[in-house]
Length: 341
Image (cartoon, rainbow, N blue to C red; front, side, top):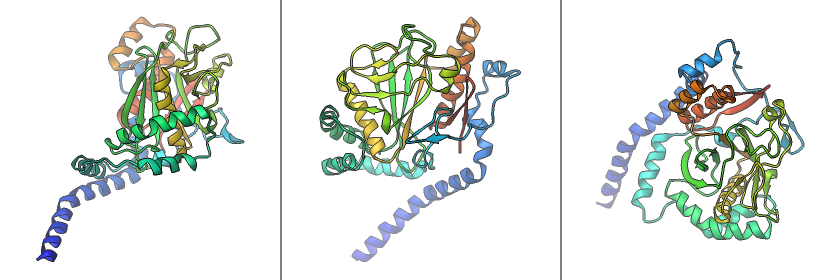
């Protein structure tokens, strides 16, 4: 009797799961054979103001290759996505996991011992300040991520919107590109619209940046910080001056995004955990505002100083809105070019 009941349950489960597994297999086959054909659809906006801005402008087909030197990428281009963030997602299987999680009394989280082990093997330098922040925030962050089918240490991606003073933290499982919004943090002030050009201009950066292990700053006296790596090659092409532009809680700094200490502790812990979990770097996209078609139409009609630059930024904004994973970003002159592997 027990054998028949067990066999019936197993067969029923296979019957329910098989269409989903076939769906994922077919999707993987489609992705493997047609990713190049999908790239323009995913990356290129079709809105009229984008088409108008492109008249007479040659857009490169793919981002230039990475140049590396020492322990960090040389910023003649932004780095390509690593294998963790570029792996393929299986939405139906992920949905199954999330349904199972919803039926369980406790989400899939790592537990205190595993969290400590994650940070111990990271090789990222720590200070007393960062250690205390990690010990205070990591268990609650892991529990909250577990409710979304995520784990502390999964790859992350940040979007910053200056006008609304918001930092979005997205995360994905190590199986795929399907980034999910985890939390939104508010910072003090995004400064004036437009990219930063020189000290004292009242602006913060706008563009596409990344944070690697060497840009985690745990021992600044003023507080924990993430260094955006400003100026990047595009900023330098426009003649931007050197400036330390950070995401931080430590005092007012020209060109930095300032948060309350508790919020910065959480963002820093998420960043540290992602690097410890194997993500070589995570991307930070900074926009002047939410670059919706309606808002960009208004900016196009106004023809402000930065409209051409913002049209280029919107290409990257639209890519993530359409695909839910950040594109590879290359820099050719002042322009950003977007591609997928």
